Image 1 (tube, rainbow, N blue to C red):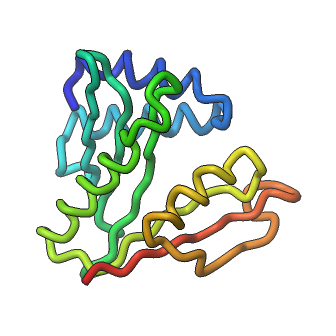
Image 2 (tube, rainbow, N blue to C red):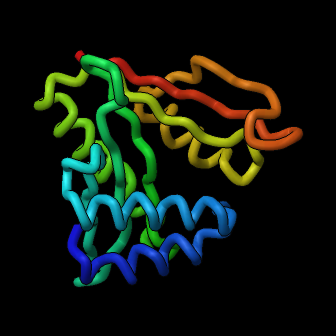
Length: 152
């Protein structure tokens, strides 16, 4: 990711109805931290392009205080490019980098809100297993779902 990519990524985030304003602000803080410090921030960011347009991005990093566990923090695809393999390609790229870094476990946290059902199904179709559900974590009726994939 480069500084020039940020406005396009922010546009994608702002045009993704699943995200609340507060979530977009956090995503922007993470992007700014990455742009300022690179991977020293603890984040890795990969951007996908299709037809010379930013189609999506993934942000991930090693979980603090762990030896081989990594988190997927953000995976977002532009609505124009959904169902074209962008998310899968980004996730597989991140998994490859995590494997090369000797990562063994990948964690994804998401919401139980109905608008996140597609995200949950997407991760499960790629081998992530729902291992934990924390009731009312984000708000009343909005549970935290933890999906995990173990790398071979």
